[in-house]
Amino acid sequence: MRFTREQREFAVAVREFCDAECKTLQQRDLLTDGGTLANSTVILDKFAGLGWLAVSLPEEYGGGGAGMVEECIFLEESARGLAPITGYSTGLTAAQTYLRYGTEDQKHTIVGNMAAGKLEAIALSEPGAGSDLGGVRIKAELVDDHYVVNGQKTWISAAHVAEHILLLARTDSSGNKHQGLTLFMVPTDAPGLQIHEIKTMEARTCNDLYFTDVAVPVSAVVGTPNQAWRHLMRGLSVERLIIATMALGAAQRSLDDVIA
Image 1 (cartoon, rainbow, N blue to C red):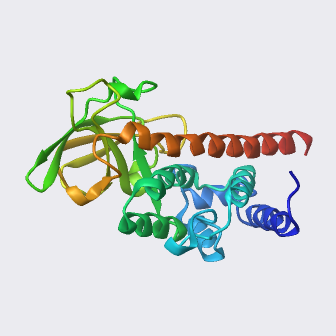
Image 2: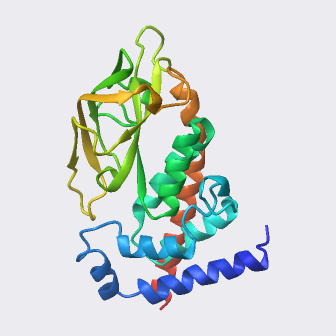
Image 3: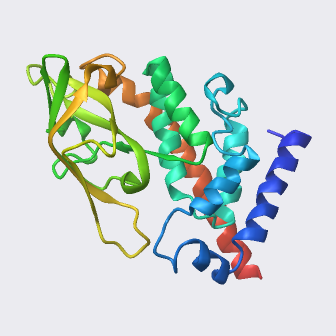
C-alpha cells in the first residue's frame, strides 16, 4: 500500500519529535531516571498534548478517530525513536477488547485514559498458565452483588503504572478449560491487590499480581460472564500487529545505528 500525504507527514512529525526529545542517551537517561523507568510521563504527556495517543481509537470515546495505519505509523516511529512509552502498546491491546465487548462507561474510561497519556494493563498469564490460558486458576466468586477475586497473575506488563487491569479469571469450573472464564476491569488501587516487581535486565516492566479477597462489582465485568475466551481473541489478534510494527521500528533503529 502507499501512504497518503497526511500519513507521510505524520510519520515525519513523530520521527522529528523523537529525534528532538529522545535521540541521545543523555536525553533518555533524564526521561527514565537513569534507565530505571520504562515509561516517561513527560513523553506521554507531550504525545497526548499533540493528539497522537489513541489515534486509532474511536473519536466518540475520546480517541483520534483515525485508523490502524496511523496507529502503526506512530508505533513504528516511536519505537525507532526509542521513546520510553512501552506501556502504551499494552493498553492499546487491552482497549481492543473493551471497545468490542465493554460497556459505554468502560469504553469512555479506557479510551479517555489512553488519549490522556495514562496507561492500562491486561492480566492473563499465571504461574501455571502462560501459553495455554485455558489453564487459568485465579477465581472470581459471585457473592451477592459483587465478585471476590483470589489468586495470582504473573509477568504482567505495566501493571505498576496502569489505571486498571483487564483481568482474566475463572468464574465457573463446571465446563471444559476454555469455558467459565470472565474478564473484569479492576482498578489498580483496589483493596487486596498487591503488585510486586519482577526483576529483569531492563527497566521495570513486568509484575506479579496477588489478589486477596478483592471485591469487584458486577458492573466491572467486561462482556458476557463465562465467555472471555471468545472475547480475548479480538484483542490478541490486534496485539500481533502491534508487536510486529514495534519490532519493525526497533529493527530500523538498529540499522540506522549500524550505518551511522
